[in-house]
Amino acid sequence: MPRIDIEAFEDEFEEDHHLLVRRPHEMSQAARDRIDDLGEARVVGVDRGRVTIELDGDIVEGRFAGTMRGEKAAVGDRVRIRPPRHESDQARIVEVLDRATVLTRTPDDTVDEERVVVANADQIVVVAAADHLDAGTRFLDRVLVAASVGGLDAALCVNKLDLIDDRSEVAEVVDRYGSIGVPVRLTSAETGEGIEELGHLLVGCWSAFAGHSGVGKSSLFNRFLPDADQAVAEIGPRGGRHTTVAAWAIEAPALDGWLVDTPGVRSFGLGGLAPEELAAHFPELAALDCHLDDCTHTGEPGCRLPGARVHPDRLAAYRRLLGSLREGR
Ligand SMILES: Nc1nc2c(ncn2[C@@H]2O[C@H](COP(=O)(O)OP(=O)(O)OP(=O)(O)O)[C@@H](O)[C@H]2O)c(=O)[nH]1
Ligand SMILES: [Mg+2]
Ligand SMILES: [Zn+2]
Image (cartoon, rainbow, N blue to C red; front, side, top):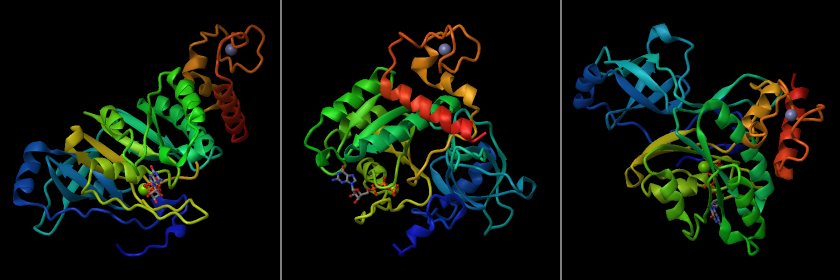
């Protein structure tokens, strides 16, 4: 693999140079012939204007038709396609179809320019490192909101279990998120512990991995796809190197499903959300059935929060996010 200046990507990988980890094949004649019949494909990689699509088992390159200028597609998008005009040309994408689910983030909470992380995924698996659990759960609290907004399921995978001796903090996290219906899996991509249990969660659907850089997303991905060869970092003492630079979807026949590896991001902004909408995406707050209209559960007289059983860390997360979204107004 060529050496790339990873620091240059920072958090802005979408706008920067991309490295496709797997190049599409030349389009086979069979694929060309099928475009007319099928007319529909799924986006598995995006590199600026170039889009890689899966067409009934073939991975081919597509491009937007002239009429689509400015339109963006994300990994997971279903697109309507037309055959290439010339021998050397690519399949032409003429329409991005409506999304069943969408996971979006903003660079931070103060801007509302949303970027699509993945479209049409069934679930998002947040990967957290066992030796950086607090950072991981803070990331998870944000993704849970974004997943609720976008209609996906969410799960937590605590990875790098081999690096910790005392698992009491992990057990507490399992309880905290289990009680709000979030499946939690405990793994080590290094030793293989828990990989089978994680696999059960991934069977039969499109799952995307998300999380901070260096938590082990690509390493887990590779556990299910031994040939995928996703770049894995050697993390330096300062950590936080972005090794995966573009989202990529690959079929995992062993799981009868698809996996999407995404680059680590520093922050998962929720700037597209109005502060007053936030509580509806915290299931334990929505379940309060607070009869006050638009209650933000921050001391309103008659609010049902006092006396209710909400985990203090989740309540703190809610208040922190609410504060940050209000500041962004
Ligand atoms: N000890 C230990 N190391 C792990 C484990 N999983 C991954 N690693 C190591 O952690 C480093 C980062 O792993 P990656 O899989 O590249 O992490 P990533 O989340 O894909 O990172 P980005 O692509 O930058 O977002 C590599 O050196 C891996 O070998 C694990 O379970 N235990
Ligand atoms: Mg990676
Ligand atoms: Zn209330």
